[in-house]
Length: 170
Image (cartoon, rainbow, N blue to C red):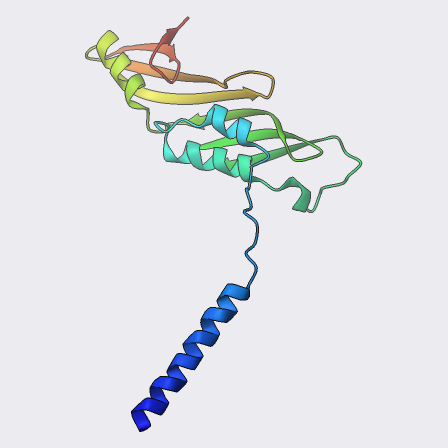
């Protein structure tokens, strides 16, 4: 008899839980869209060095309206993001949308297309220094990305410029 009462009680509890769960309303689906998705999509390069991707993600996700210096009367804001390997100077409108950025990174890991292009065109040369520049304008389709390299071969040095796909520039 004890077992019957136990199973009856357990059944009642389970039925009550199921009824309560069925009676709850489901919330509508929520989609979150980043205000700066266009900037992030334009500058994101999966082959770029980790510090580059980190700073670009910070600039894209920055919440301007929660900043201490935010005032509704101002039309534009300049915000700088710094780490030892680089910096991003981002220009935001009053709504927090990225209008343009100027980015500069020093001695970051080069993407494979850039390394391969240099090795193919300049065998025997080593990369002594590198600077990676990114310029984004909200009116452009894509951000401009440029690597400036100093190559060395013994006593000789030369400077070359490439885009992020390994195409040499004049």
